[in-house]
Length: 396
Image (cartoon, rainbow, N blue to C red; front, top):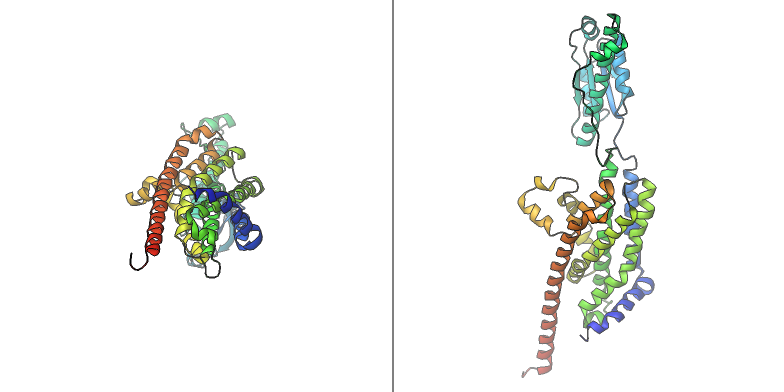
């Protein structure tokens, strides 16, 4: 209890370090929530990979084949960069990265179309990047489908069918697709809002561990930390919490709207982020107590963002991962938090919908708090034992 009474002093000590004696901690608290989200948002500013480079080999060189080339170029997914004379040259552009899609129009294309026979068009699409493949292939199919419909309509009209008659000749089953929750299907909107939560996590973990680690470096001995490391670290977390909240506000109310990242209700998202920061407290303190210096904090934590994102089920379905990965993910606070972020960003702004995930987060936080209490009690017992041994002297 005597050490708990040191908590206000620990909070004031951390505030003095941040704003007066150790500005490097302040730099970390400012740089992570401002620089990192801005850079990532700039990288994905266009949100979707469109206008994938296309090369066409037109061996027919007819009016119909040129119409197909124009239809391909007119789709938002594709951009006609070159026309080449043979397939080998076209495939070389794929290998060299000059193009991602190669289309070969055969020399009998127009004759087959005129006779009403199937005309085969061959296409090569680079799938080294699955995102660009997923964009280019539907665009290719849409352009060919549109041209096919135009040619069929023209043929029927030449045979004397009226416009109404042409419409009655369409297939009886019509496919109509509607994208739910995220209708633009933009990659940036799908990914970045989750990355922003992990930026907040890194801000909390790195800043606290860095500050505590600096107290352990040679020449930076802190008597308060030496006396009560657990209470001092908790005080440092509480002192930094105001900057955590400020950094989160900048991310959600300044950076995210500036780039148009989806949020149904920014206020609800802000409350979720604050709940996540609070739930991180026991884990952040445990990690901070484990680092030996400021450099270790960065080495330990700065490379955790991508694994945490991948393991959470945010970017890849959790049920498709190995059982041991799912087990690890279940104890990481970022897993329920990222799932809640997905709900609040694209589906609903109602916090009641994410209550089960918040309960999951609370259970994790309670478990880490229990571990923290056990670790702190064990450390206090060992210090007391060493003190008794020192007081007893050699004879004791």
